[in-house]
Image (cartoon, rainbow, N blue to C red):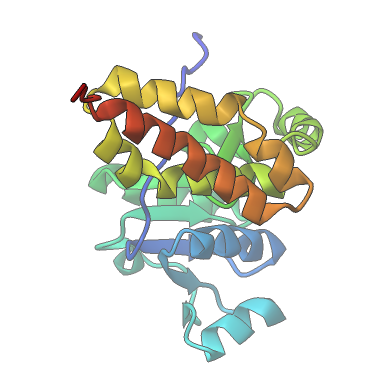
Length: 224
């Protein structure tokens, strides 16, 4: 059988209804990752961990203290099955399939229509590492190596570049010119300055690059 070829995407879950079936430690981690993306999370499980109970008591998530039923999957955007009951997982997969709902069954890729990569997140910088279901353990170990490169400073740098987009667009009237500005930022000492904790100097360097480009945009006049 041909191995599945997964299409990597980043999904906007803000204010989307997401369902997690299960209340153990794995479900707890899945809930945390969904909340990071501002999803609206409902957990279905007779029992949940202390952390999940605390989130429910604070109104961060909804908790349905029942066993899974078909009605709970209605009107949801995404479902994560985090139970150790294969019968329940298979039932959820069948219900999700009928409704074309995004479904991940933890550690059972054959029941999923999407799988979750091992993720590194630093601010807006997100790196997903996947082995297409072949070896999630290796993906986790490889992520640990990559974490040395994707530092908090990298996340701060990406955020600064994102915040500069309006200014860059104002001083550059074409995509190639904007790309040149971003490349100049990338090749500048900005990231190194952020790594050293020199935030003010990093911002000054970025503004200098943009101002220089803005000066180039204005044609010089010769009154002599």
